[in-house]
Amino acid sequence: MTVIESILRGLNELPNPMLVDVARYVHSLNPKSKERRLAALHATAGCLDAEEGEAFEQAVKAEADRDHGNLQ
Figure 1 (spheres, rainbow, N blue to C red):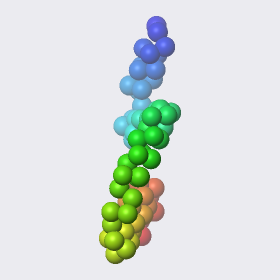
Figure 2 (cartoon, rainbow, N blue to C red):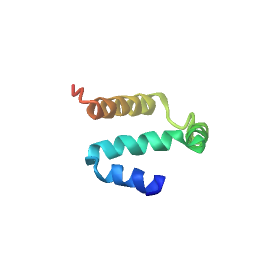
Figure 3 (cartoon, rainbow, N blue to C red):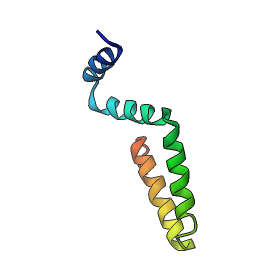
């Protein structure tokens, strides 16, 4: 069995919520991912006014809380 086959077999045994975590981790290992995120941030920096920025920040925080089970 190759390394890839072994990894795929292990992934097939995981429940879906864990696959999301694995995908995020694998994605974080790619140095190009960070470069793309930074490029997107630089390209969009300053595109929201203060009120829109505050609303966006609150929405992101609420989503993060939901993702981590901290419903408020």
